[in-house]
Structure formats: C-alpha cells, structure tokens
Image 1 (tube, chains in turn purple, cyan, red, brown):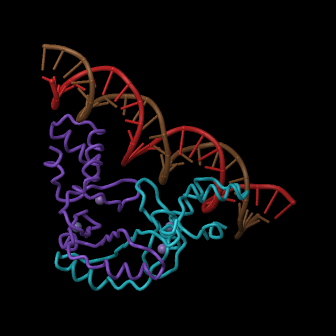
Image 2: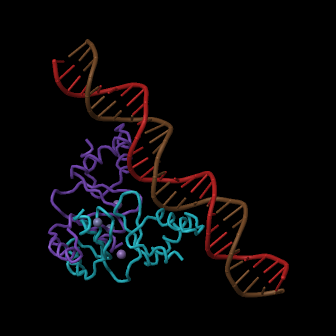
Image 3: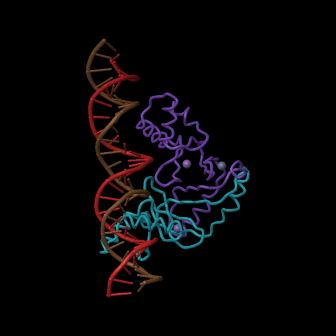
Length: 117
Length: 117
DNA sequence: GATGAGAATGAAAACCATTCTCGTATTCGC
DNA sequence: GCGAATACGAGAATGGTTTTCATTCTCATC
Ligand SMILES: [Mn+2]
Ligand SMILES: [Mn+2]
Ligand SMILES: [Zn+2]
Ligand SMILES: [Zn+2]
C-alpha cells in the first residue's frame, strides 16, 4: 500500500508522502505515515536521508550498502554502488583509536537536465 | 566572544552553547546564539553536523576540506584529513551525467575510551 | 556633549516537523 | 459471533528553530 506510493523516483518527506496519498483519495492519517516510515526504516526497507536540517527524507532503496548522489537543483537521487571505503576509513579511524561501525557519504551535484536548463 | 566558547572539544547544539554562555554569566539570548551560529556556518567558520534527526550540532573546525569521525557513545569528534575521494566520486557521478559540487562523509564508531568502558 | 539612523539584541510568540494520546474501527483467535 | 488485541486517525502536545518587535548599542555627525 505505502510501498506502491513510496515508489517515488526521488526522496520525499513524510508530509509529502502523506499529501500524495490524500490527494490520491486514500484517507490515511499523518501519524500512520510516520509510523509506517519509521517501521520500514528500522527494517532497512527505506533509507532515511537527513540532508536538510529539520526534516527527514525517505527513499525506497536497494538492499546492499550504498550511497546517494543528489541533484541540488531538482532533488533527483541516484544510488551509487561499489563503495570500497571501509578499509580506508577503518585504517584512518584506527589511527585515532576508533572502531568504525558505520559511515555515510552524500554527494551533491547537478544532474544533466539541470545543467542544460 | 562566541568563538571563545565554541572552543568546545566536540560538537554542540545551539542550545548547549547557549546554556554554557548563560552559566558562565554572559547574558546572551538564544536568538542571538542561533543567529550567530547561522552566520558563522554560512561563512564556513563552523561546521554544521546533522547526524541527529531534529537538531543541528556545530563545531569549530579547521579550514580545509575534511570529514568527521564521531563516537556514537560519547559524542567525541575527530577531524579526518587527507580526503582523496574527489576523483573517484566525480568519475562515478559522471556515469550518471552529474557534475559534483560537494560531498560529505560521516564516520560513526566507538572511541578508545568508550570501548574500554 | 547631544542626536538620530541603522544595526544588534533578547524576550516572547510563531512555526513546523515529529511524536503522543486516546477514542474508535478493524482484525484475529476461537 | 464475541472479546482481546491491534491498527488507525484526529487532534493535542512537544521541542528545536525562526520571526517579531520593542529596546539598546554604535558611531558618525552636528
Ligand atoms: Mn530531500
Ligand atoms: Mn569539521
Ligand atoms: Zn537535477
Ligand atoms: Zn566515545
């Protein structure tokens, strides 16, 4: 149900998703959207991106470890695979006595369409 | 003035910084702390970290491009230098027609002290 | 030294994303 | 069917951040 709508091409906030659902006629409550997104996020079905201060964006993503390429102009999101940073980061962290548990990378740029425009 | 206090070892929220200032006797308003941090952040003097949803942490950092290693237990922050991701990311992004303008990396782990505890 | 324009300040109110509460509707086990 | 457990939605509450606005500072000029 939500999945069908989370099939947005790019990321979307809980409120945006709720808005689309309501506009489509589904009488779903905002609380349920938040609850469901939290659940899906906890289970790794959707990724939570925190690139804007003050709000969280969600996106239906592939399963493995990956990062995101975001167009700063139109908000388009592309998944990047093949992240081989773990070794490098672990070594770097070890120099400071840290053990690495996770890392995030976010790449901001401009997509072809927005460059042309 | 604020600089002297932003000399916190780790990152701190606007409200934490305000609390320290008031505790120290400076009669500064919360709004001014927010205004000043936004200004400093806009000018690149402090880094804004958004690793917690819902609040922004600030940190006085060195000038060049760098990333952060954060201890998830005690909030200690270490700066990482020597980032050579630009080439790799630009190539990867070009495959999707993107031009890269910036990237962020955040590494979460556990520091030596917290591992021992 | 007085004065006034404009910037800076702080207290309180407004804002807004998110979470909580709680009464109702639905589902499940039987 | 029937009661218990769960899911739901509407609205209130929360809490970080921003805005407002009356007051205070700054400082160049008279
Ligand atoms: Mn977004
Ligand atoms: Mn920094
Ligand atoms: Zn774009
Ligand atoms: Zn630690």
